[in-house]
Amino acid sequence: MTIQLGLIGHNGHIGSALLPFLLDANEKGKIHLVILHRPSSDLGVIPTKIERRIIRLDDHTDEGDQVNKNAVEGLEVLISTMSDASLHVQLPLLDILAASKTLKTFIQSDFGVSWTASEINDSKGLQTLVPIKEEINKKMKDLGIPWLNVRIGLLVDYFFGLKFLGTDVQKNKIVLYKDALNKPLRLTSSKYLGHALTQLILTSSSNLDSLNGRAIHIFNYTPSGQELIDTFQKVHHRQPIIEQYTLEEYERDSEDTNLVMSIKAGLLRKWGEDTWSTFDDEEILPHDPTWTGQRDLQDVLRDFM
Ligand SMILES: NC(=O)c1ccc[n+]([C@@H]2O[C@H](COP(=O)([O-])OP(=O)(O)OC[C@H]3O[C@@H](n4cnc5c(N)ncnc54)[C@H](OP(=O)(O)O)[C@@H]3O)[C@@H](O)[C@H]2O)c1
Image (cartoon, rainbow, N blue to C red):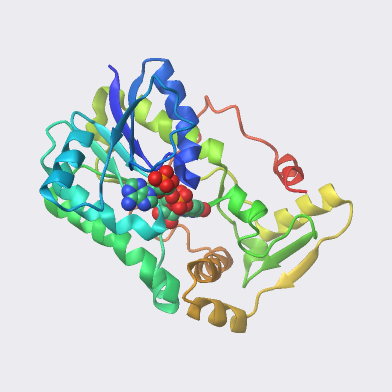
């Protein structure tokens, strides 16, 4: 059965990771992909044969509502990969989704990690980001909308490319906080995310209801600080510089209203304290045996040198 699947945010970091896998599933007739986009969105990467529908999630007039109703008509799975700044526009969308007779799963734009109360409490940035995601979860539950929550580790491109946690492949430098030397960091490659989420949906096609109410964690590398050190050493043929992130830096970055700095502080702490798996809803997606794209971490590192 062909799944009617909508995607919001195809140009973004997460949306562009999902897109190739969804296009492939569409090509194979396993899904009918519908791109939901703003009138201003760049559609350059979307093949012309793919269905596109306009959404106006910021427009709360009757006309806007009608456009959004038309956009979700007939969809069984809707994946939102909305930017952080626009997460709130998913709230009015939920009222429309609640009336859908076809929807089996809404995946809100989370794709983060499960933050502990203490981590949120410490962090100015997380206090702006996490509550809106929780508000959406609550509203979905209140309205009886079927949902699947997708959480990931830190994107590989963010860790190695954007040097999000301070670790720098080119400078052969690794930044550790607390006991990160012995604790796992959760990293997710864009391709693995795209493959794993698409496969999860496809393998549930005969029973999409089975996706409802689950919080799935998707990641494909879990190096400890020591394993990173060993990998850097092998690639650079010399010992990396190890920098210890201090409590003072953690407190300074947590106070920063810049989301990047406070998420950096929160993730360094999460890694150093290994609080990835302290949640009742933890459901780690098992590695799919059909995934052949797993690369050695040394090769991944070389991409960023
Ligand atoms: N764990 C991680 O490492 C990680 C990394 C990145 C993001 N995330 C999370 O993943 C989620 C998505 O973030 P992202 O970085 O992928 O987002 P993004 O790249 O900043 O933006 C994604 C898309 O949102 C669309 N958008 C923005 N406002 C919209 C509106 N009002 N109506 C419709 N579309 C709108 C934009 O579409 P157009 O401009 O094309 O119209 C944009 O391409 C967030 O919750 C973020 O916190 C997690």
